[in-house]
Image (cartoon, rainbow, N blue to C red; front, side, top):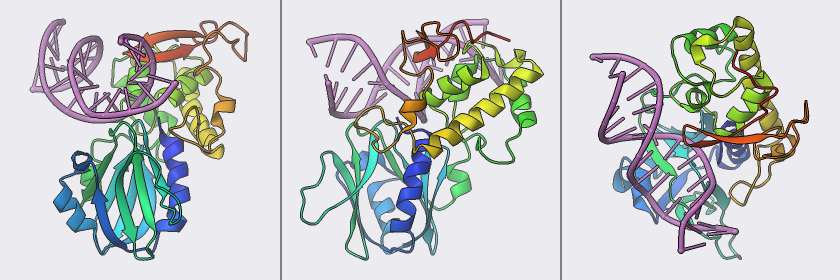
Length: 267
DNA sequence: TGAATTGTTATCGT
DNA sequence: AACGATAACAATTC
């Protein structure tokens, strides 16, 4: 579930606790989610200091000193919790970093789809990711060029992390609604105005998501308020906030997709 | 009980 | 060959 705004929120919460700390030890209870391999990753993380915690797309990035990076992808159900000395650990703890302070950072992941990767080279490890939608370098002109170079339906294209990094199902549906664009619109057939609307919609919905600490729809990601500001996602049958037409749920590229048929047209 | 959930990868077709 | 579409897959919750 965690998409760009959720991962950004997690990074901001983690940073003040983790930055400056040294990793004393690392233990995994599900080694297959540790890359490039448990022994290699463990050796590379142990006794290194966390310089900074940031985000690239949906990846959480820890910059280590003197060298190296930890990249955590939460996938569907990954989340971080701090171990409490006088309380039992939460369920589904898959990995534990123990810090020089003795504090334990727990990686919990019910579905075990998350990934913990150590990499020497950040650029190489993130080479397949598309641009950051909130970067100042990501202009409407840039998006227009990218869209025109492809001939694909907007929804699956926006979900493609190698096209643009960070959008998932929720924010893609919300961005398309705000842009007034149907998810099946072909990327190379947008008018210049539609490109501008889409660029604006993507950035504003992500910024709004961050402002509200992300979207909390179930037990997987707590502490967000963005679910109160969603206009189409998960609102099947409820009235469109603009025109009151009931929101419809369709399936596009094997993904649940929520639209207002009146407000969202191919153009 | 099986339907739903999502990003990534492998595979198929054009 | 390159690109787009599609299926399979990871594992669990309700």
